[in-house]
Image 1 (cartoon, one colour):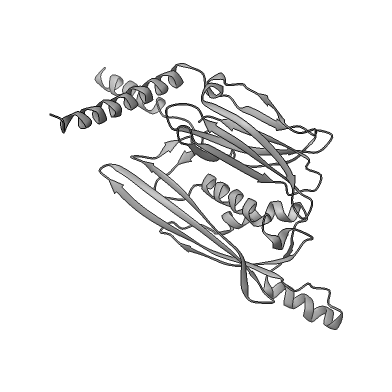
Image 2 (cartoon, rainbow over the protein chains, first blue to last red):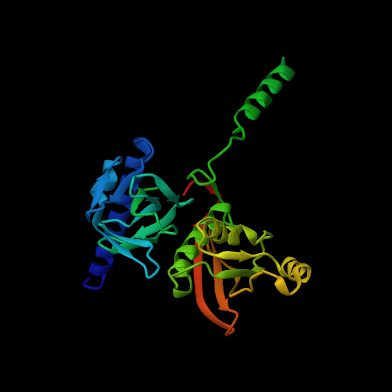
Length: 143
Length: 179
């Protein structure tokens, strides 16, 4: 009997995951397509966010945004993300670069699929190609 | 009457198809194929390679002279490897981060025409690479991995100064639309 208990618990856990995943799929199916969310670095440090899809806010935490310069003087940013949900999340990220006056200088032409394990910290990094790119706008979408 | 019913059914079935529409090549409604490299796969691998390459010390300052070497397509899919290279060269050239040397024949012709006064730069770096694939399946679930490998060789010393590998893996039972 003792041998069966862990197996039973494992089976139950696997079942729970399936139920949670199905719930997640249903929730997605019943709501409009996910919207794009933004996190933009500030000249004085830190970042501001624009959350268009509240569901992503409940699952993904944006912990920090670090800005530095490369040896050649180009801006480099790192955003720390944490999956606060109990399920693995897959988000898609993309970067846009802004000049000091706010004009868009560079735009990444694609989404990068970024899997996030539950509780895992993930750092996404981008380096500007142009010297005038001063601030970075991270675009996030959950599917 | 029967003929008319059949015709009506046929029209109905044809009408159910999805008409072709234009899609944003950078968007999230593109076809994801399990058996081939999709256009968005080149974009994903290319942009990640680009980010890695510009972080290498060779690209920290100035605009080094770059020549494109060969990119071997070692997959069963037939495509032009320029689809990958352009994802790196277009942003680099437009941002003045590299001086892209045209092919050998053009450079040699320019040197021959201008003689000793030729102002044709010599390549400092050569970019070469390989694209490979790996396929596996479990039951009806198929998985395809496409491996993009690039190496930057410093011509003067003949040594690799940067190398990167990016893998794009797709899994499913059939082709789909979207992420």
